[in-house]
Every structure is written in structure tokens, then in C-alpha cells.
Amino acid sequence: MMPIWDRLAIISLHYLPVTHSGVWLFLPDPDASSSSEEEPDSDDSSSWDGWPMEEPQPTPSIAAPAMQRFYLAAAHAALQMPALKQMKLIALLETGIYWHKFWYFCEDLLARALWTSSSGFVPDKEVLDRWRMVPRKHIEMDLEVEILEDENALDSSDEEDGIYESD
Image (cartoon, rainbow, N blue to C red; front, side, top):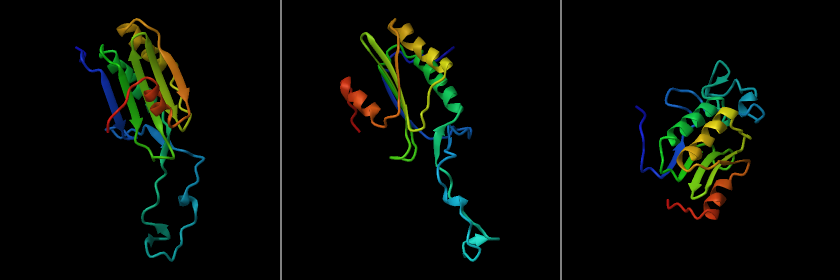
């Protein structure tokens, strides 16, 4: 039997860019410059055989295919939340440079989903279809979908619709 969260109305989740099983939800941008491409200094005392002991790791920023499965799972969970008014899913990426955010909002006769990402993420058809099922099931309305590349879109949407968070 599926879990049902009858009274859960608001959920906000800030998540890491890797799953508990080690699957990366975001990959490094292949176009981003990396200091690891430079030739290491063989006289450096922190190197062994001419290679640095610790190379800088590229910052994950591009949504991986696993993100589609992540959003399918979130929609599946939302289908079990009849009182859901708002769901925020925000990736903990390098602040100010990369972002990936999702917001679902449902009130009265309005249901909206917003994806905003610095990498231009677009949910696939299966994800969109599953999310469209959520308001159809709970309030018998269609879902309005927005896909943006604006880091502040989520914050401005909260203010427009009268939802404010206290940190």
C-alpha cells in the first residue's frame, strides 16, 4: 500500500546534488573552465610524480538524466498528498553561480509548476504528464507549466501568490 499524506500542505526540500546511492543528479559543465587542465608544477612540494595530491573537483551544474527520475518520484509522492498547496525542491549547488529549483503551487482554481535552472533544464514528457496528473486528481484542474532560466523566479512567484516563508 502506498503512503498517503492526507494533511501535508507545504513541503520544502533542499537536497544535495547526489543521491544516497551515489548517483549524481548534476554533472560538471564540460564548457566550464577548469584549473585542473593546467600543467602541474613538478617541483611543487604537494605533488607526487608531478601530479597534485588533490585536484580541484569540477562543480556539478548540469542536470543529469537522473533528475527526470527525481521529478517523477516527486510527482508520484505529490499524487499521495491531497492537501498539497506547495512543494519546493531546491538543489544545493554552488550559490550565485548555478541553481536548479522547482516549485509546485496549488490554490483554489490555480495549479502551477515552475522549473528554473542555470543549465536550461527541461522536464521530459513523462515528467510533465505525471505532474499534470497531480492537480487533476486533487482539484480537477489543469496544470500551468513554466520553464525559466531566472534564479529569482521562485522567490518572485512566492510574493505574487502571497506565500511567504520564515527562515
